[in-house]
Length: 624
Image 1: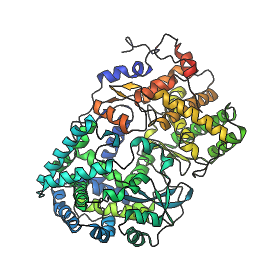
Image 2 (image 1 turned 180 degrees about the vertical axis):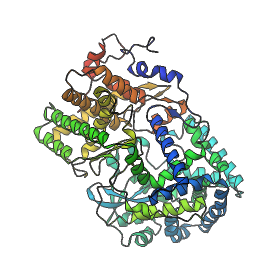
Image 3 (image 1 turned 180 degrees about the horizontal axis):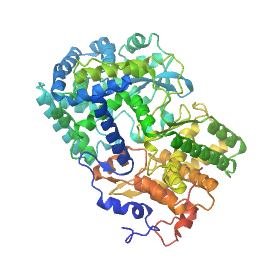
Image 4 (image 1 turned 60 degrees about the horizontal axis):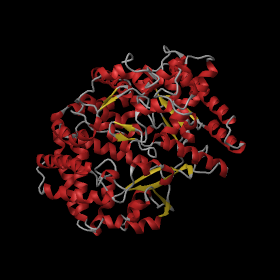
């Protein structure tokens, strides 16, 4: 492939083309390569550990409980015993005929994991990150995004969904299946008109809309007060409404309670039926496979591990991290992080478009940023509450575990936020910035080749994990993070002129990506702008950091490994789906478009104006 492609024309395919040409996407996946290969690697390791612990229990009680649940999933004959439990839950919904019935049932529905026409939860308060707040959002739509309704895709996808639902209802011997489906689709269509699109959700600062408790109660008109008092003891002064349009139109959604009941039944079935048997799991995955392009469902052992990891992720992550991530690597990664932060401070101090006042406050945010590497020192106490009896069916166990986790979350409402919590487990192949905590997390599982290795060159490590670290730091200063202070609170710490300059640059980043073509679809620059700002800042700070530790560094190695970490091969359906709902840009452009902004790329590969990777200097953009 490198004989046919010039790096000056296409960095991504020069580096990854030969692999992409030969790679085969597994039948149970929509994509392979990059992150996905590391996920597979971690899963194989943990599956081997599970099988070993099944034969010889560990000294870790949580690990043993996780393996017990794993083996419970593998016992298909036992899983079928849960059918009566599911049917019993469905029958309760028949008690709801009107608003009065719904109000009486509301608390029971909430604490027993029934689908509600609105979601309530407890999360950090974005105006005071030391406290929690009660929040409310609308329900999910059947199609992945509201923008997909009233398009050519709607009919085809809903047809697949409908056939799946009818097959499952028939298998469960549910009466009036066509009527249930029709009412579900009607209710979903109403939801689609009043909830946010992915693009709207991407501007997460706009989720903070505090309403008085009385206003929310009046708009819901369903004895919301009884639910809240029964659950939390006293109602909060305010409820944070994430999507006001939904709340304002809620009563219009609930004009026919038979539609809600049908919708709730179908959603309850779809979210639980896979726990009954492999046949049901296969049926329940028809629609998601149509969306992603995957040809088969995952093998039962992978499914079992993923289900267990949903509940025991932190204990599994600590076990993985302690065994497979050494102290030498942790110390090295911490040194890279600190170098990136120092480079960021230096870049801010020498910034030519910010005032000294704004620079000083940005540096305060960097100084307060917490670093979490590998895995937490101890497992959260909440995991010791996840107990169950092996005499219960799998669906009953999952139902109980969900109740425990929701109750644990709800108990936080009037407590002080614990900023030591990790939002990702050590066995997760990912990294993140938490705006409410102003912290960056790099789990052990991502700290391996090609992102990082003690065996890689310094250039490769900075082109890999260095850019990822810089990316997460940059989220503190993307279009959302820039509106929050060092404590995780929404606060304007900019001068008026500086923020206007930042908005101009944000708009330029939106335009640089908006409309880029990929496999017949186009990139939405507004949807992906926060991640594109972070990628841009990640590369910029990694370049400076590399220069600090190794003058005259080999930037060919740096940029080639940067392209390598985004290597993937995806099915067309999956690519199209991500372009619609994912805030991240497509892998191809995360590599190829970003590097065009940096002089070091042009110098490393002698890229000229006649080359396809050339971008006119007037269009190049470096924000941080």
